Image (cartoon, rainbow, N blue to C red):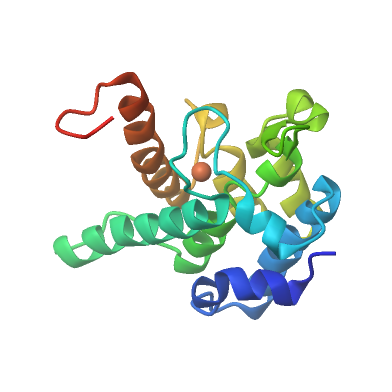
Length: 194
Ligand SMILES: [Fe+2]
């Protein structure tokens, strides 16, 4: 079984930047619960998961993607905080880091192993995409509605919906990692080897 220590081992650096102890513990609990619901037994299995089934990932794992998106969203926040004389809105950094770490946690129930050693969409994944399943698990683990918003609305489910600022930053960081891979696949990424 994947436990809290395993999750802290994966995301220790990011988790330690969350100031609110309770939020930090709830983020870890959400990953543990999602791993349980998805039937993942070991942290090695989690490390092996690709971050998407929608395009070739070039070996980028869900764990690496989660770290990259969290870092990207934080950098987008910092860029504004350091460049504007006056911020028109306030960044909630705990919410931003928690949301970055959790935005794709639903993929643990959306994805399962296939018969050939690869991965496929699960039955649960057909019922509800990862933004929905992730939001449900996070809410079940006690996370507040604003952090649930970062999960529920980070992808197409959030189009046109009200969002906290941090959801917008996570969405942009997420698609900055996803779109180039899709373009690479389609031969639309200029000057990159295919
Ligand atoms: Fe993502």
